[in-house]
Image 1 (cartoon, rainbow, N blue to C red):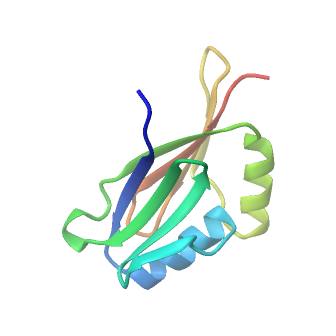
Image 2 (tube, rainbow, N blue to C red):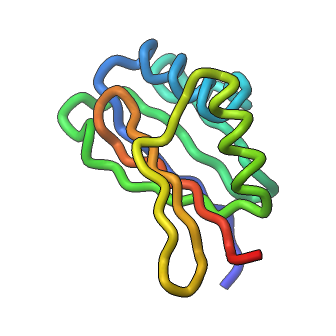
Length: 113
């Protein structure tokens, strides 16, 4: 199956969330869909968006697999964003869990070396 991944995260305080995601992802949004929806393109055909939707905020789960998890963790820490937890599963896959101000879980994973 081919297609474009466009994953959304509902937030209650849009400005606060955008500032947090900019620090987490290390860049301003790629484009603004409208006044309360901003999009970050993570890679070709893979985007994440934040949308002001208070009734749904705090229930999101997102997982992004990276080629260089350690590099991402170091860069995010330099921007003042630390994971809530870093887990290593029995098969060696690692996952760093971040929570945005609404409590949405944003995970970044890495395959075993």
